[in-house]
Amino acid sequence: MVRGVSRRGLLGGGAAAVGLAGAYGLGRVDDPATATAGAGEERYPFRGEHQAGIVTPAQDRLHFAAFDVTTDSRDELVALLQLWTAAAERMTGGGAAGPVGPVEGAADLPPDDTGEAIGLPASGLTLTFGFGPGLFRDAAGTDRFGLADRQPASLKDLPHFPGDQLVGRRTGGDLCVQACAQDPQVAVHAIRNLARIGFGTVAIRWSQLGFGRTSSTTAAQDTPRNLFGFKDGTANVRAEDDTALGEHVWVGADDDAAGSWLAGGSYLVARRINMTIETWDRQTLAEQEGIVGRAKGTGAPLSGGEETTPPDFAMPGSNDQPVIPVDAHVRVVHPSSNGGAQMLRRGYNFVDGTNELGGLDAGLFFLAFVRDPETDFVPVQLAMARSDALMEYLRTTGSALFAVPAGVGEGEHVGQALFT
Image (cartoon, rainbow, N blue to C red):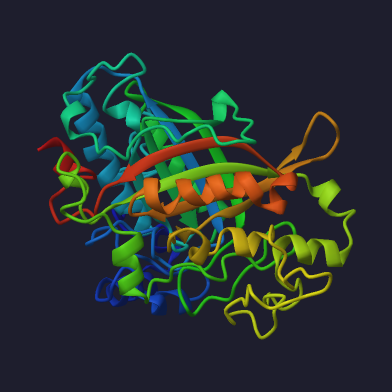
C-alpha cells in the first residue's frame, strides 16, 4: 500500500497532485498566483518566512479552534507542537494527518487519521498556530511553563469593550489553530485530527465554523460581502503591499525585548460578532447606506466614485451635515480617524442555527492580524464602541488574542524560537 502520498493520490490522481505541489513549492507562500489553481488542487507550502494563512489568498471556508493546555509539563507541550507540525505539513500537502494513514495501519489499532478527507485534495488548506496569554501565566499569575519572562507586553486579554456580551465558552484560550480551506470538510478534518493528536495534552475550549470570506487578502480577489449585504474589507491590507505589511502586520525584531521570539510573526485578534439580522433587514436602503457610509450595490463611498475611491469626509450634504454621516462606519474606522491604524482582516460569515428567540444566530467571525493590538486594533474598537452607528446591530459574544509566531523553517517545529 502506498504511504505518504496525497489523499487524491490514493484514488489515482497522484501524478497531477505531485506536479502542482512542485510548482507551488517554488513560489512564495503569499504568491497570489497560487489562487488561480482550480478544483481544490491548490496547495500552500507549510514552511516559510511567515506562517501560511495570513497573507495567503483568503480561502472560502474556516474552522477555528482555541485550546486549553491541560498538562503541566513543558516537555509534553513541546512534544505536542512537534507532532502538530508534522501533521500540519502532511495535511496541507494533501496527505493524511499521521504517517500511516486512515486505512493503511493495523486493524487492531485506531487509525492515525480519521478518514473523512479520503479522496479530497489539499483544497488550499492552511494551518496557522497562535499562543494565548494563558500559555505564559495562568489566571493566578503562575508561570506555567517557564515562559513568563518571554511574554510580550501586548499579549494580554483584550479589554472588555463597551457593548461586549462575551460568553465564557467562546472567549480566550492557551493555543489556537486557524484552518482555512476551499472545502469545509478539509478544514474540519484538520482541526479534528489536531485535537485527536493532542488528547491528554490539550482540550478544545471553543471553536467556530465560517463560510464566505469577508475580506480579500490579495489584489486579485474581489471584495466579498458580509451578511448585511455590503462589501466588506475594501481597504484591507493586501499581500502585495510590503510596506503596509511591515508597518501594520509583521512584528519587528525590536518591538519588544521580551517578545523577540515573535519577530516576523503577528498578533491574531478573534472576535465573534453577532449581527441582529432581522432588525437590520427592516431598515430602509438609505438608512443602511447611511450607517455604513457606502453604496450597497457598488461599495463606493457616499461621496461618490468607485469602490476604491477614497471617501471625501468633508463633502457637504443636506441640513448642514456631511454626505457621509459623522457616525458612519466607514468614517469611524478609517485610518485617518485612528492615527493611521490598519489591520489585515480575514474574517468569515457564520450561521449557527437560530437563537432562543427564533432569530438567526449569525454574524461575522472577525479575524485580524496586526503588528501590535494596542495601536492597530484597540483604538479602532474603542472608536466603534463610542460612535459607530453600526454598533446598534452588533453584539460581540466571543473574544481572544493570540501571538502568532513567524514561519516554520526546515527541521523546526511551530513556535520553536519561544522554547529555545
